[in-house]
Image (tube, rainbow over all chains, first blue to last red; front, side, top):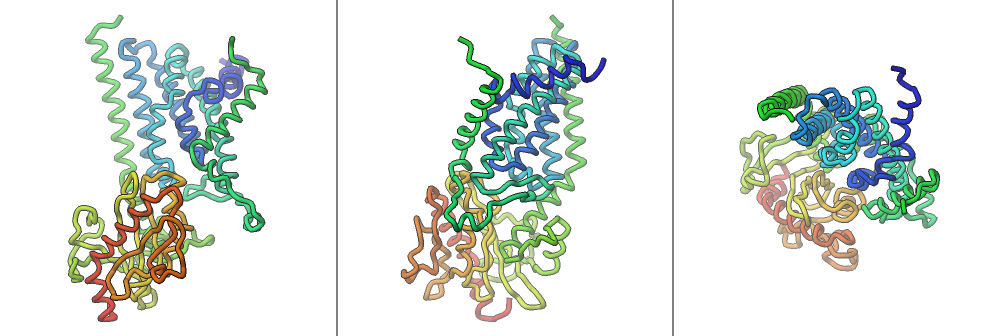
Length: 217
Length: 237
């Protein structure tokens, strides 16, 4: 099978654009609000979600013909929960500062509706390579939104842009002191969860405008 | 429809495989995780003692270990201020209030600061930190909160520099030399007030967290009072 034929492209592209899990299906909002305070957190969270989503999709797709349908939800949950625990343990070992900041939200990837949703809707019905692409697409779709949201939240809320660097984060940009002296102020609201709702709302609006999507009558 | 035996067998096998995967991962990273935790504790002690992380030498675990071993002496005292034996990593200051850890900052054979752990209830959670005093056991050298579950942006601000910097230079002893700690006000400190040297600005929207911090500082520093008095009387530490 050719990897990037039009069907594969569609599997990857759709969840990023016209069928984005956050902005169009409105799934996974909980973590989108929680880990978007800083850009570096959002990036690490995205990588974690992509890893879990791709691996759980592939694993479940491989065993899809053997899973007894009565216990499929339990099996899906155990596979996802184990993968998430592995990610959590690895973060604590190799990216300690980041794991402290993300705290419970790494564990909460288990309850991220996107992952269960893709397992049930796609992985159990398709082969492993397609399931992998679907996981990648949805992970990127999720990541794109939380990275956009966190970029604006951090820039206007805290006045910095931080990239992950294995430690406490590398500050790429911060608003110069002179601006503060001249009367510029950070928007405190953006640091709080309601701030994320506002930005997310704007992102959803923009994206729906771009793709011309309207609520079905 | 699969049979019950098949279903049970399947679930059993999946469980065994996943369980093995998890324990395998944990076994492989456990040492590293424990090392991280210990380094993190040391990092916070260093910060409270006014060691500053520099651009040229970021605080990796190894750097923290080196600075700590070179400049910090750690031991325990009891509530009477006498030295006692202890294994610092196993001291649980929440449960056992008889064994009190002390961290001295010693640079070129001169004692420059005394850090002690403090912890207590904020609004939602227990707030953990270290407070460091100058050798006069009165003036605050630095304070650092490293673990809490307070609301980010409100009570969570306790860990931010703008809040902790306010403690620097404040006095924990009253005029008659009792250890009274530092009070976190609701609102701003009025510097014309004679008590202002024992007070810091509160965090707006986090009055309860501030009150909690004030009360556990008083309580925890109070336990060290005998030790602090000895230090002050002898001039030795």
